[in-house]
Picture 1 (cartoon, one colour):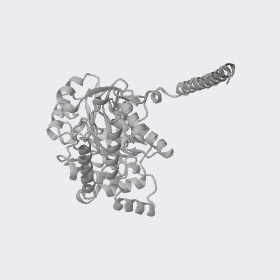
Picture 2 (cartoon, rainbow, N blue to C red):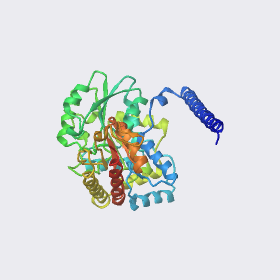
Picture 3 (cartoon, rainbow, N blue to C red):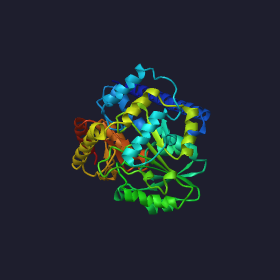
Picture 4 (cartoon, one colour):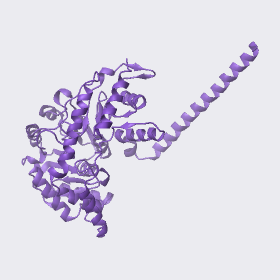
Length: 436
């Protein structure tokens, strides 16, 4: 090939590449302009909230699976068990009986009575039906409570790590999140001293969970009581206690914040059927609160969704009546066994530090050992980098700690089969070994 021909060929390639690059940059610019234009049309409340990273990671997993890639997704907190047959039968009967009309916004009376009986039986808590609101999932129960109590500028104390939606719901209410940092050394639990320091004249609400998502930490009775005593000294301060993982508890019997009579009239207890009864898709949430708060949430819900599905309510009614040892304990014991399996397998992976979670179905390891390490085009600077690396290189979907308030952790859900967990830890170990 002559030098002139080589020169023309090289010049042609460069011209084509330049054109491709120009088109690519033009597309990026157009996409940016379109995005800005759309955002300008949307309300500020929508623009200021973020997509749930757990849902986002699940979406990325599905996209890769659609491409034929074998992805193990441990990103969503969803039991892999089937809803107990007795609950499904109750729902089928409700359909056959034409129980398909509107109910009371807060749920039909007999269901709320059954929920009160459940609280009395399991938690030694006394509620009346007019203190109960049934919603379309515990997430709506939480949103109802926050929107009913928090005004713009009100401060809401949230111990970190926290469940992903707490902060976004506070933002919708135009409240101000006040984050209290916890760590491995404290088993990710907020101390009374930390709580006292975080309280200001603007503080309206505390939002926390036990058992906790994402850490699996479980507050003991004396730990809750110490926090309750701090709250007692601040008469305008309320507690939203998220107890959705109540029955997935491997330590002591579950402890509710509302057990302390001296602050019960300022406690909002959140529960539901998604986790303990393997009913995530049924969307059944429960709130127990002082009557005036329940009435406010009923009013709020009445303008958004009205009552949750009448069929779901019948299924929930049956769930409230089930014997723990027969229907729930086997699932809890399976989760305990999986937890022990995951912790044991993680011992073979260098650099992972974790607590021993006593509830829920998550492990939340600290992964800063891998910061600064590289492989191919990957450089690990935080948990988000590591989860992306594990997804693309190890075909394992996890959630970065950034979703829960601190990006030096990752959340690992063990709500799946032992076979998948063994394979997931194998992939994780092999992928992390490539980093240096």
